[in-house]
Length: 196
Image (cartoon, rainbow, N blue to C red; front, side):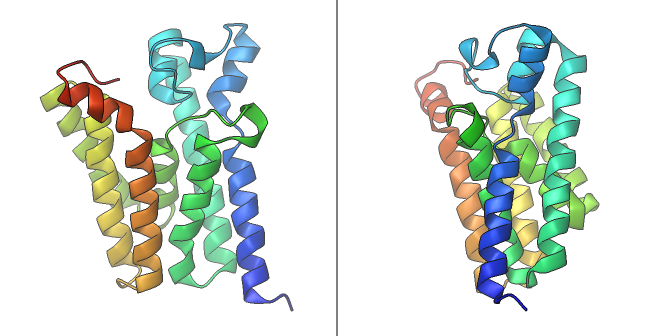
């Protein structure tokens, strides 16, 4: 039998490599639209796909991100002690942000965090989506909607794993990393410019 730490390392590596597959970049190559990172926010995520290719393609990318994240969550639940599961969300999002296969320039991980959380709590995912919609509607800023979503998911993830210190630290690290990926949006918003 493999040592538990070996399984953790293997699943973490698998999550990172899986996250390194960026569907928006692959989609744009298929459509011969160039690179989604070259326009608007420079982010390789569903929101930027929406700006450049329209809602249908953005929704397709979103669904692929959600499905990928749910698959990784299933893998983590299947093979790891529960408190370590949030750490796999972090390595998945790390791969999404710094993808090995796309020059280490990727997305910000919001959809992946949503999909990962949806695997073990669809209700929390729905609540987080509602928080995102309300925040975006009130402010007109997608990144503030994302912030509301991340906060909701992180609180629920901590509670779902009985506030275990290992789980809490993984959830906080993941949320902090996603918010750090939005630092340019926060700076632009504070300075009075429109966040992307």
